[in-house]
Image 1 (spheres, rainbow, N blue to C red):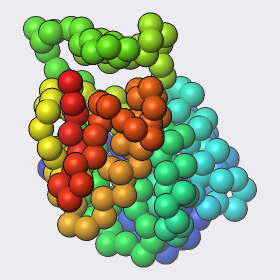
Image 2 (image 1 turned 180 degrees about the vertical axis):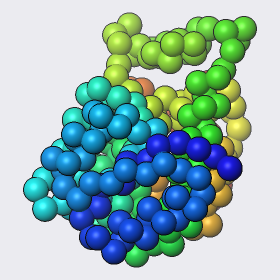
Image 3 (image 1 turned 30 degrees about the vertical axis):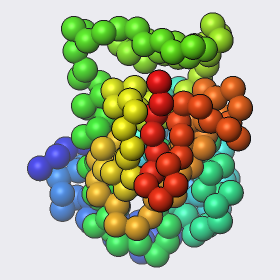
Length: 231
């Protein structure tokens, strides 16, 4: 049974209790907040391993909380939201969220997402020092140990899941992967139908590493099949 401390930020009391019950059942330590102010205070004191964050809170937007957390931490962060619009999802992931779950949802799926993020984060952090350190291709330069990236010689900030996705592509060049398989390999869980998380992260990653994101040369779309990292 996987362990870890989870911060649940949700203003709907019944839903908050339900999420906590499922997390507790799977061995997680849970702390909860019903407002953004409580969430930020708890984040500093509890130092959670994963944050589950409702976007719509009574005192502030969850996106603002996400930005504040990303200023100081790369902890996995999962948005819980009623918003299903493509732009809302892309914008949420673009500011640093790792994943999202739309309401209504199966709490068991949310627990699986938490487990997947913890498992993958531990895996990426445990990569040994014996691997090749530097990866370079044209204008892109990646330190595979420190996981820092330069584009055209200039440091480029990346969010944790973007780095994990880029690392996955680097280690699997010139292979076509369906979005569902990318989700399983990078996020750590199978995805039966919802691939928008992958598509959104690839969209944001292209904005940072492609010279022309509208005509990408590195992360290419193979219509009907998925994505390929071409080098």
